[in-house]
Length: 161
Image 1 (tube, rainbow, N blue to C red):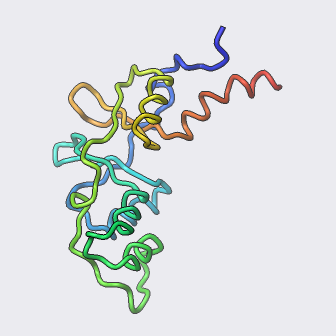
Image 2 (image 1 turned 90 degrees about the horizontal axis):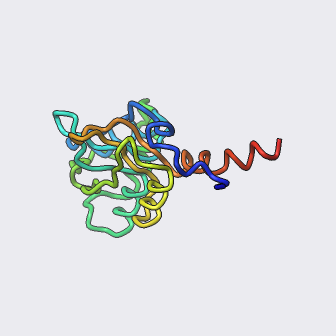
Image 3 (image 1 turned 60 degrees about the vertical axis):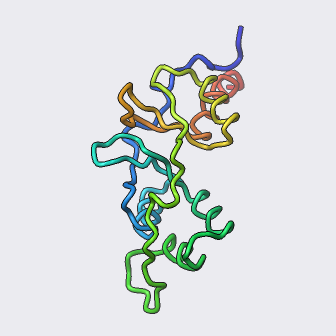
């Protein structure tokens, strides 16, 4: 008898209707999208709504740290804190778009994938989110490491009651 609900499907644990970014969004726009929705990453979809990538705060910070992006790190951090109010001498908008820094090969799973399969995907790829897509590549949901933690911890918590 297994202690964990590893057979739980993606459909049962995913957050549905994920907030998505578009490739043409500016860094400020995607930063605001992440902050306003209290998320750390988002699927990137094309005009038809199909998944084409994923963008996260970690990806943006890593790219800035590695160099190669023609933008001052101050711009990104200012945009993450941007409340939409005029802050006076704000760092000017950059021409860098989501498509310039998104991960183009997002880790995906079907709605029928098990929690165990998703955990293995995350572990092997070193990512914190898996995008749940339908057969045509349209995002149906998102599963984060915290979502999985709830699945794996739930049976143990129930036994302690």
